[in-house]
Image 1 (cartoon, rainbow, N blue to C red):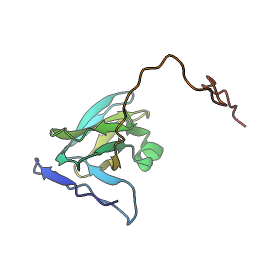
Image 2: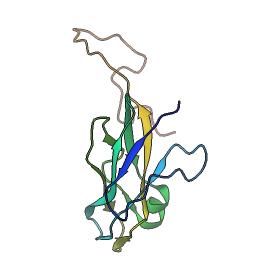
Image 3: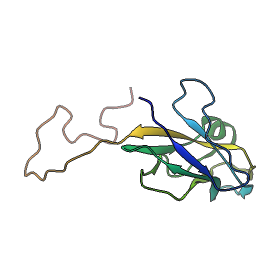
Image 4: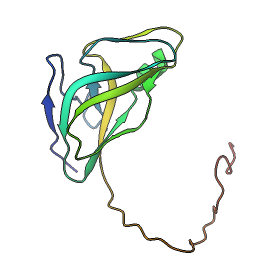
Length: 145
């Protein structure tokens, strides 16, 4: 599948989303501002971009593994969803789970965005659901080994 993603830069320090390697699922999103995130706190970080997503798609905002591993910083509402009709600025909620202050710098790669198709679901209210092998088992019912 190929899509055309329209991006508007609305901040002088904004950068276009960028695919670091051919075939990567995610497009890197960059900070358009500097901000300090204290341990245990979350901050809303500006990317300085607005999107016009292709019809029938959503953008999923996901953490960057390097920030999570090296700094314990991640996207708080992961994956965050940007709906097709949203035309506001893309902002990223980052949380610092680490023990040290974390400084977000301009042009730092802070998250990744995956463009995904949206299934159109028709909802039907029923009185009974079909049985399955799993049934109501959940929350660890399949064990850990």
